[in-house]
Amino acid sequence: MRVTARFVAVPMLALTLALTAGAARAENLMETVESSAQFGIWASAVEAAGLSDQLAEDGPYTVFAPTNEAFARLPAGSVEALLKPENHEQLVRLVAYHLAKGRFASERLEGRMTQIESLQGDVIEIEGRYDELLVDAAEAVETDIPSSNGVIHAIDNVILPEWQNPAVKPRAGTRW
Picture 1 (cartoon, rainbow, N blue to C red):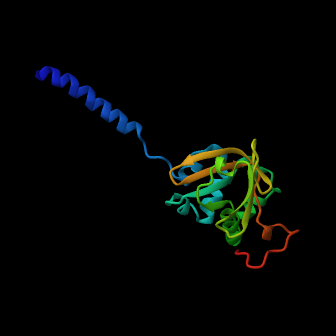
Picture 2 (cartoon, rainbow, N blue to C red):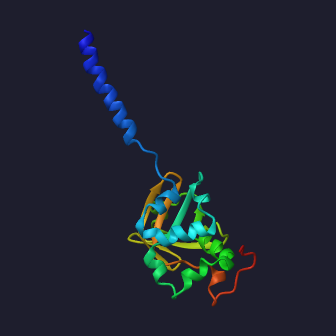
Picture 3 (cartoon, rainbow, N blue to C red):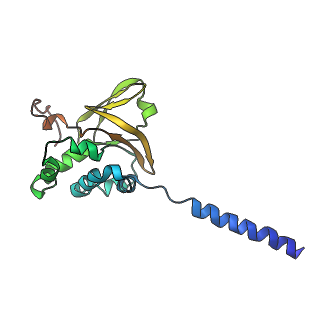
C-alpha cells in the first residue's frame, strides 16, 4: 500500500510543480512593450516621458502604440528632438495622447465610430470598421495585444493631438 501511495504522490507533485512553473505572471503594459521589437522607439519615448511606472500600474489602460515604422515616417530628426530634455513637456503630452484609461478591445470598438479621452486630455477619434481599426490618422496593424493591466493596439502612424497640428488651433479647455 505504501508503494502505491508513493507512485501516486510523486507524479502528482511533479504535475503540481509543472503547472505552477507554467503559470507565469502575465506582463503588464510596459513589460509587454519592452519585450516587443516592434515597439523599441515607443518604449524609449514612454521611458523618457517618465510614464513607464504608470503603464506598470493597475490600470486598465489602452495603449495605441506606434510601431518603429510609424516613428520612421516622421520628419528626419523628430524623434531625436522630442527626446531632448528641453522638449520633455511636449514628449509627455504626445505619449499621454496615445494612452486611454480603460480596456478598449477591438471587438468593443468594431462597427462604430467613437471618441475616447486620452490621458493627455484630448479626444482620440476611433473608427471601428469591420476589417480595420482606425485611430485618428493611423491604422491599427495589430490589435488586442494582451497584458495584465490593459490592451495594446499597434498603430502605423504617430497620432498627433490637435494642439500639435499647426493647421488646427487648440480647443478651449485643452489640457497640455
